[in-house]
Image (tube, rainbow, N blue to C red; front, side, top):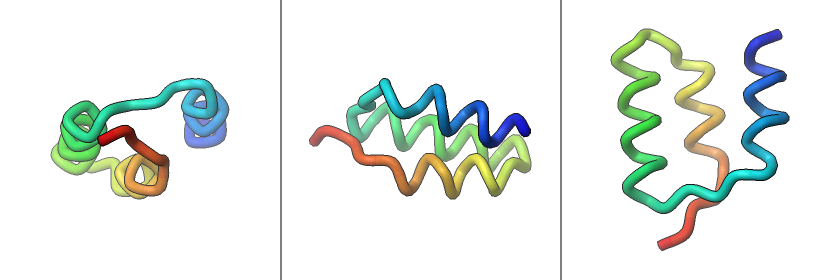
Amino acid sequence: MALERLKALLTNILFDEIQKSFLINLAKHSDNPDIAKLLEEIPATP
């Protein structure tokens, strides 16, 4: 359920590569592989 909510929230947000990388690393270190995978799939600005 939280993953679906996060997907909905991310539809209106565009991260740059640094922000995206930080959030992916944070998710991985927090033992949230599903969230890390979701973040890896969203587009980012260069």
